[in-house]
Length: 480
Ligand code: BG6
Image (cartoon, rainbow, N blue to C red; front, side, top):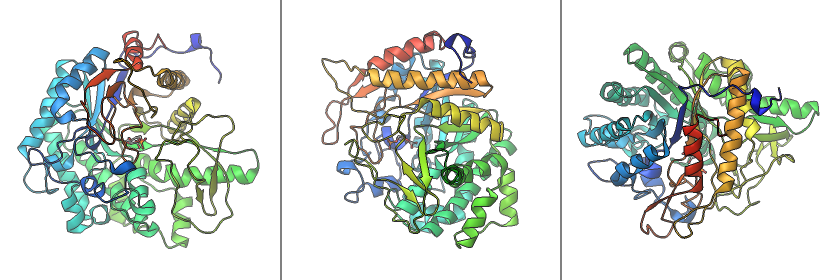
């Protein structure tokens, strides 16, 4: 329902006001202290895989500057910080003997956060699979990964769960699997829908296995996957378009969320996949494993919504025509054959990367998760990627403030509706490497002085949004 600002419930005192990052996008030091090579280290070195061939070899050098970065988090007043652990720092070859230097790095980071009373939220996997596992058995395409991922996660639980209360199992399985195995735009660069659904099922098993191990191990704290969920709207009330909306959400969102939250695939999608001979092999033992790995919360990564019309087209080109250049209006129309065609929503603006800006969409996403699964939600990502300009040591980013403010207001409305939201991590804390979009698409509260062509000084500068979020946190959201 429509609510006036004065009718909104205040944010709870325990609300985790946070911000987020991922190892590959910030750390750099890609070969230091015995770290192994990840699939991203390799993928980006192939020409034309990323914007201007950018890589994360140095990224924003967080590995060497984490103390400075954490001090900035403390100055901002963050209550929580979500970061990911690079699997190949812990196991350079993906398995075997753990690398003490890797464990030490994250241990120091966690201690530094705790010294400032910042709650660490640890993502176990944010896409940087050890290359060795890709080479040995094809990474996510082999069931062997379930055991290796569980062992890796268990080392993390054993080492850090005395200090960590929130764990994210997989980050955006829907993104790394579809980009990696259908669109070919992420490693391993495969374009094959059958292989995609098979790899996805194995990732589901790995996710459930890690959650099961966490619960069985009796570790304190909570665990859940982070999922990139943008609700879909029907373009209009034409029943065909409404059906297309339902099909799109089942295929693109509930196909994952249902498995996480209930242990079962949506029957409608599975039936179609079976007909098309694309369905993964799901054994009785798999069903049991999925059912025993139900998370404590759903991690929500929300950026945008989609608007769809029905599709009558039969074939899939495999070309999403994404705008990775930041030239507005250059993305191509996406179509899922016989399901839906993605169209522009006349009510909504878009960013320079053609991402739709839709604050009410986050409330709709939260409401959907609540009514479908009744699980608490931890917002693990939300933010605006835009060009920023450093002028005389200052960055004026009113567009980002407006974006974050409107989304937080809708989150507050969703909580007033009855959704259980544990906290909010903006994407991102410092500027960082955007996987396919280089360094010019900036998300941070803290500007980092580097670009695609030069590492420059890598100095940090506080943006206007830094001071704005500081006030929001100081007032526990009253300032919104
Ligand atoms: C999410 C990822 O998909 O979106 C992040 O978890 C990513 O790692 C973020 O950076 C923003 O996407 P992009 O493509 O603009 O960097």
